[in-house]
Image (cartoon, rainbow, N blue to C red):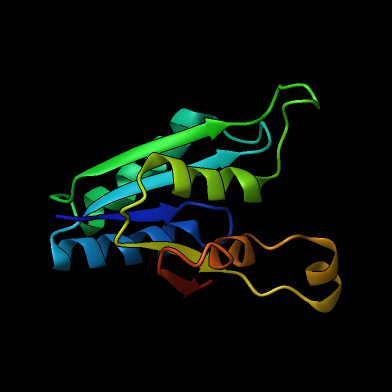
Length: 135
């Protein structure tokens, strides 16, 4: 049995997780759900509860590990980009992911120029398949 890495982001994240859970249920795979919190807008327990609610509804029998990494409250010397945190989580936790599931959020021209893309950072890995869910 393999494991699907789910990048649990911001926009459309519940739909992305539901999509991954359906695939895991159909294939018999486990899920590894990763969320990096950059701000104090939500508590880690709130994120975990949200993930559990989606999994209970869509695929209650799928085994899932949920990791919520908190980045807020650290000094500027230890802060790293969310792109690096996500890429490191994919590389360091288990190099044998079946694939990565993440949302593909479309940005306008200005946003695309100013905001670095999580999707591009993961696609640049080239050593793990990536399934993008439109959100």
